[in-house]
Length: 509
Image (tube, rainbow, N blue to C red; front, top):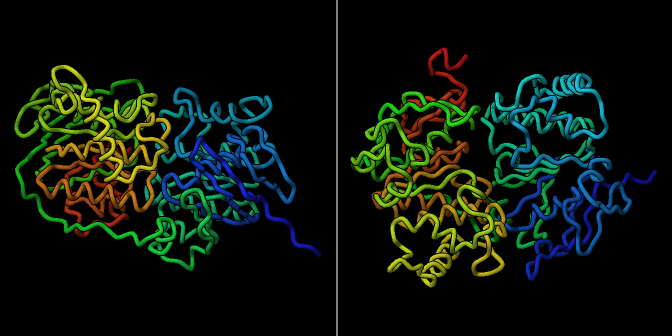
């Protein structure tokens, strides 16, 4: 009896954007009942490939086979009807709507909402992803929102589930729950195409991997038989070294201080900051951990000056009260800021990189002379960021939206680090970047601190914080825990703090 064909195959796929070959004769084969990793550096072509598998893009050459038969996918609806589902890295949920209403919007047909809610509850129970269909999305934790995305996808009965960085916003405990769900999906004969830069989890849950570099397939392997270092080496083409960091006690003067800062939510679904205090010393990296949605965005806004504090003395930069001063005033005093949302907050999508550099650098007068923009200096600065942080781009000064997510991340972080600020506040510094780029960014943060700057890094990546931080504090329901020295901390102990352990009982309720 002949063997069944693979569930999905991409054969000699070519996709070009101008002169850039995003996919250069790529082959991919995923079998039913398999969790298959798709790995590669930022800009390697992973997103382009899965967008073609989901019908968002069309290949310029090559073909896609579904269960051995060629198919042409003109859009996501056709892909879903065929049996392909995708959960994107960035959520696409309406916060003011209930879980059931969000799910109903994505389902074909016009089933009554009570029927959708019943199916949702059954599916969430069956896969160990508990959800209350009646709750509004703004009330959910980030982990619960991830469950909504996955359950919504599973209710479309996919044979192939594409997951893009699914654990980037989860606590270790939530990630364990996801892995159990994926094991159940695989046992049902479904396939998972798994994109992640967390190579240890790839080794743990995936039995096959296809590795892209510069748009081409450079390796296929069983990741369980590889080390994280060998996988990274295949992705990058050379050995990826760890960062050089010896955690120390605070050794410089206090450069950034927050004293008893309380702020009401900026909008209806925001989080109130409650009596937040911290002291950040020159020469140290202070990590802020926490499940997203516990006040990290609000803390960043208060530190950057996007939201003003009730008292000037609530925020101090090198001893100067700046709580009532805006972001440009704080930049003039030597501070720099990298927000989490890279496209729209950290960078204007339709502006070239040079103008985006001007947006955050003009306050300190770096790119102005006599009221005029120094265009040559701006372009030279973009060139320097490109060189130091290895930006992959199609032209010297493209629009921000033309960069892949990881390359835009390298730009927005590198743009601020190369200013050599006295204080740097950065949110999710390596979100969505590959192992080599993550190492480059983390080492740059450590080097900046070694020169006497104070670095505050807000991150949901506990491995990252344990690698670069001298002390780590946790945000929970708008409160900030006392910072703890990184020595002796583990992912598990931080995960418990992130879940509310050690905070007042009324917060954990």
